Length: 303
Image (cartoon, rainbow, N blue to C red):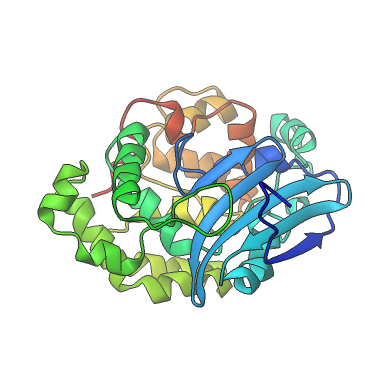
């Protein structure tokens, strides 16, 4: 029981050790002030919309595994997918232990799992908001809209629900402008909202099919598709091209080369094909590359 409100349902998922709960779920919130998601040491709260109603899901690391508790009408839907959100459907053994520094990082980061987020549409909107702007500006726009339109999520700890597709479609140009969202991103967000059912269904698709759906959304180019595949759908081979910083950092981390471009980044990652996003995630955990929230500069050049 949390804060006097017993959950409407709960499950405990066994965990294959090692498992790094905090690092695995590190990037699920949209920054430290995300009104829809909160992460504390060994615990994560996520509010979401499901086909049967809203829900608040809590994941917590326990001695016997990951404990999932849920509040609201969407409890059964959320609990069926909670293990994926915790990264427990991911198999880090696919990378093995390659020679050199990546092998060392793989050993040190062998507890890192790739979450597969059942709220794919909400995850996609977060990355559309980051197109061509700083993470700080994108997160601020997200907060403004959610605090204005998001309903209270059920149960503790006082989160707000993310915007539904109908909310995005109901915004006019002035609404987007006041939130700091330019016309191009607004058009992409509306296109994603119109395709929300197909986007949400990618949770159950193989990576190739999921990429095809995301690519079909007008305004979602290689960067948005690649980063959504990796951080939202847990595709171990996703590579976001079109990032302003990542190729340079990967070039330096893997080959000591400054000024690498996308082509060179892909060449350096080719030996790890099938697990290229996992390599990027290990580099991120080791501090060898930056996440968008770690820079004040625009991150993507998506057009």
